[in-house]
Length: 135
Image (cartoon, rainbow, N blue to C red):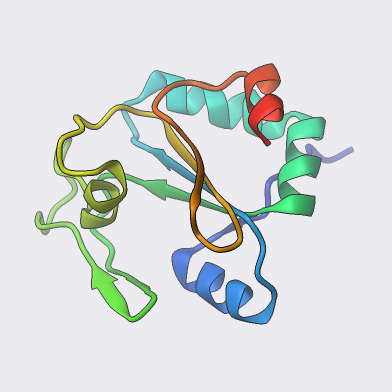
């Protein structure tokens, strides 16, 4: 039996999907060094109830906050000022979504309504019970 999996999309795939069928969005930002991020990937995002709820009701995007890849979304290209992946060098997309005065904290999960208004922002580990409550 295969483990249930979230149908993760890239930002480009998200834009295409939203153009065809608007739907709420779950954005999950993580880093390679974040132990709670890994725990969410390993435990929360493999729970059958969580996976089913996300896959049925949301488009989901997971993104490495320190990624150096360019992201084109809604006619804007966002990038990491650093050309090499470095701890603490965050992608402009992350900076934009966190706001100017916030210190990055991971994992960072945002739920957006279909009209892209923010439903909830969470700068912490979410257990199965916690994420099911906000979904």
